[in-house]
Image (cartoon, rainbow, N blue to C red; front, side):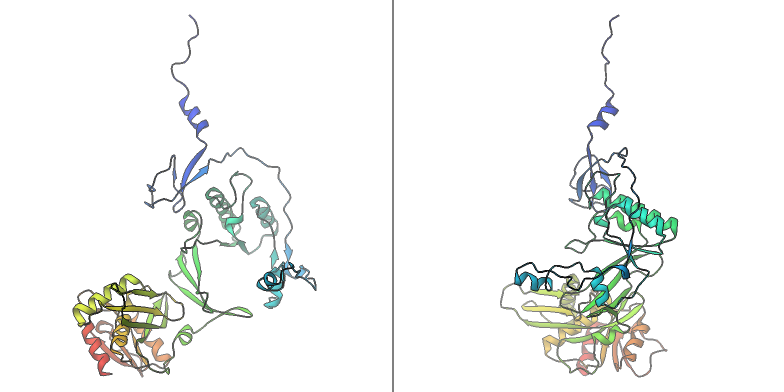
Amino acid sequence: MANLPRAYPDTGRNMQAKRKSVFVCSVCGAQAPKWVGQCDDCESWNTLIESRIEQSTVRRAPRSAPPAQRLDEVSIEQDARFSSGIGELDRVLGDGYVQQVAMRARRLGIDAPELALLTENNLEDVTGCLESRKPRVVVIDSIQTLYSNQLTSAPGSVAQVRETAAQLVRFAKRENTVMILIGHVTKGGALAGPRILEHMVDTVLYFEGEKSSRFRLIRAIKNRFGAVNEIGVFAMTERGLREVSNPSAMFVNPNRDPSPGRVTLATQEGSRPLLAEVQALVDRSPVANPRRLTVGIDSNRLSMLLAVLHRHGGYQLYDQDVFVNAVGGIKVTEPAADLAVALAVVSSLRDKPLRQDMIVFGEVGLAGEVRPVQRGLDRLREAAKLGFKSAIIPHENKSRSMPQGIGIIAVKRLSEAISKMRSE
């Protein structure tokens, strides 16, 4: 019998040979064999990015670990900057091009003989250096610039970010090393690259701040060993960042001149009470569709509060522009800011200021009720410590152990808070 061809091919082997790439979700890291509009795992839209299938057979000859140079051993030339020949460009660059790491350390007065620098973006070289030195703390700046020899994709790709982060995390756990991975963020403020990177680490910190403000916030979005949404406040100075031990005193002043539309809010960031000023400006709109703009306050909650003010307060704002701002560049996301925002809007609309030594907090419901908030006593203690004399708070937050020196106005409804504001 003649040899007949096989009736079916080895489909599994052929399909694996043809399959050159997969599509990886940039949010959760899930893989799909073809592009689809929505990720099946996290249900995000338009997040699948084509990525080449990496071959594990790629091997490179091992190289010796590069040496790290101590910071105090870096020589700084007397004329470290050199001109580009273009005066305007040199002015923007700060008098020319420069290698600035050691110069900045000297300008900031950093004396750290144990700090070593390694200018390398190859993962194998980095881990080889770490294996030889066994440091206690490692800072990678940034994770999107590292690449591994075992992968063929470019630095910053989904596969490279995931693999390099995984190997660094394994080293940190094996050697009991503190590993700090610095990552770029997108224009929307999200971490660039696969979202799975956030799941691989123990803590995720965001460095926030407005360009026009000298204050910077470090916010914990995830923390396996502490409270989430905890913040640290820093001030940008000529000597670098300096911690602000009492941020409430930086954002508010109980002795300021009274002005319509200004209300001091007692908010809570993590375990820390924080006083912030909320400003509102209400003015007759020259257009058919009035504007509703917010900075640092949720715009959706402002729209809800304006509807509640209309229904339960008797204030019609359909022909008014409303602008609300949280002073100092902070972002207030908790519902406890509702009552302060509502009273600031009423104060601006009526052109009647509140007392400058009064604080306000409380959540406002759709029925016009003022709901209690968490840790109300801590907020009042922070206000009393800074010299505030009165407070409008939810009735359920009133207790027998109120701080001394501060008068409490407990309200159950928004209309009651407005009437108390009028009597002050």
